[in-house]
Amino acid sequence: MPLAPPATRSEPDTRLVVLLFETALLTSGFSLESPQTYCQRIYSMIALGLSIDQDELPQSSTTEPAATESSGDAPPPL
Image (cartoon, rainbow, N blue to C red; front, side, top):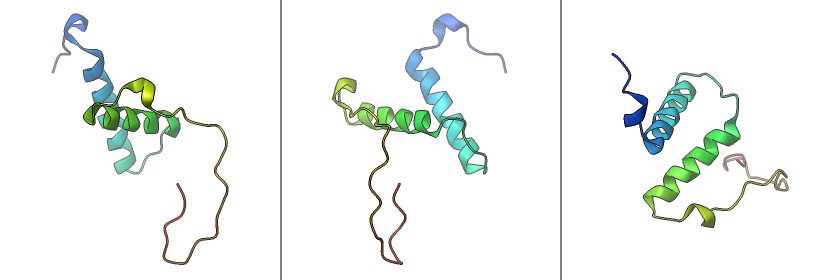
């Protein structure tokens, strides 16, 4: 199937296709080169769906949150 001409491709459509592709990779058991970039795309899509301005999104930090003790049934921290 031929690709659409570049002039007809919109940036949001391209980002959505990349997000769908990366999600398919994860579902198939592959890993991503940059999980942080993937997460930022997810946050952007959620913000878009909730009509939140991109400037209001928190910036990702480079520090890890402090580890807390967890019970045996609780999922591990993200």
